[in-house]
Length: 386
Image (cartoon, rainbow, N blue to C red):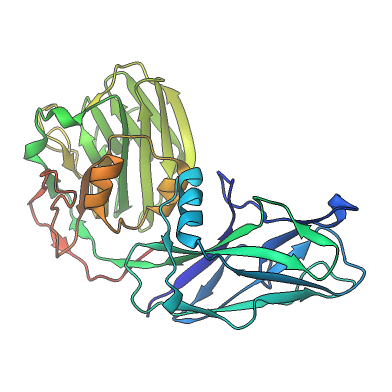
């Protein structure tokens, strides 16, 4: 069954949530009303399948009488969502009208309370596109008290995420993917770059130099576990003019989304683990060239004709731009339209390592990966995020 997670977010927020506000002209600080998650106070809830999603409104103070607050789906929702996506670096799709119903576009904050009665949105996930995050913009339209909306801050965004169930490539030691068409390609000579991989290690390298290669080119720009300079279960980016080791230590048998965001203009380099910043370092080089060869070409699971990963890889990507933490979190499981992302957002290479695609570059840029060794594929039952 397909599962979904929902969260409420609002405009002008660069991290997670910004509250949609109602205010009283007489006493501003006592009139704030914000969209919040229902029941447990967390911004999120889970559904096993199509079904109800609930949220509540909350006030900064307890109200002294019942207050009815009205809201409605935004009529020009596509335009409003476009503004939100641009402001927040997101790529949410509008939740189609056919996929939701709201029984009542109002709720009551009872006298003596600060949290409203739950609001229910019935969500039908039939027809959802794998990897897409859907959004329903909502607007507070007023109340039956002296509270009035603040122009520009009356919106909230119901975000509905679908779990992605994916296949992955099994890479026992000695197996890997290589991308021969990357060699000397000028499109891979980059001033800025984001490189991502979703990976699970089965074991760590037990012999010198203790390296389990993930993605990239040795001595140029390579993500890897381990080195003689760190523990075998630490993440490291190594390359010309840049070296950074993660604070985190990783576990075998656990899936991780790993990313490096390198800015050769500002000379900064950041490591992210599951969308969270782990480590940063200045860059000493003058850009990134993924088309170089150092004994081996650009590869996944191998470098310098060895140093193999023993594990599984679900997918990997290279961008010719800097992705934000929000983009890393939202895109960690899948990309719905890689060709469009390639054309509009500088996605250079996108490899889904499953039985259907087997390392093909889904951007259309031609950087196809070819399997070497005893590569096999799992069933499409790996859930993301875990």
